[in-house]
Length: 214
View 1 (cartoon, rainbow, N blue to C red):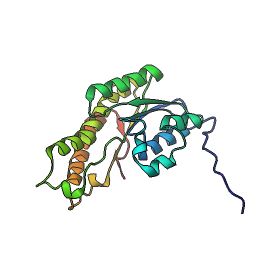
View 2 (view 1 turned 90 degrees about the horizontal axis):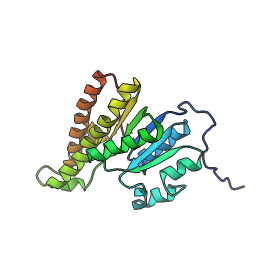
View 3 (view 1 turned 90 degrees about the vertical axis):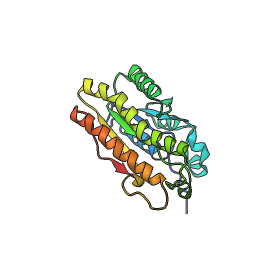
View 4 (view 1 turned 120 degrees about the vertical axis):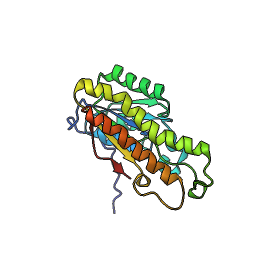
């Protein structure tokens, strides 16, 4: 049987989202990487934002799956347009600066995929009776503050454009907390908190697409 070699995906010359501009946080690996590559495949210019643009190196399976040095390089190798920005979403000023850089580069922001976040620690270590306050602070800042800061930064631009979409990504722990540990409850609270913040933005005319637990 002949060996079949998969060719790298190259986006068509025209796409459904040609010339649109998207920011994807947490895009160096995992689902964020997948979202960024898919948007680029549809013709979007993608800002790949992450704390470390090479964070996939910490995970053997993901490192093996990479087809280039970074998500940005993968998109560019497939004929897309991408900009890499290292940013800590827990830092309000840094997030504002990241969005400002994207606007300087491409003039607009039509899409935000707020994917940065997640959990830390073992479930056994995250029970309410043993939860380290530093862990509580970290997880809350990543999942709640990071999402709100990202939305806060793009909302004025989208309002001025009179167009824009925000996609918020959360863990299933955000809708169905586990009895095994407290961290899931932190994620649940963070998810509920972002719902409140985005409700205010919806009243101002910014459209939020369905929250996607994963």
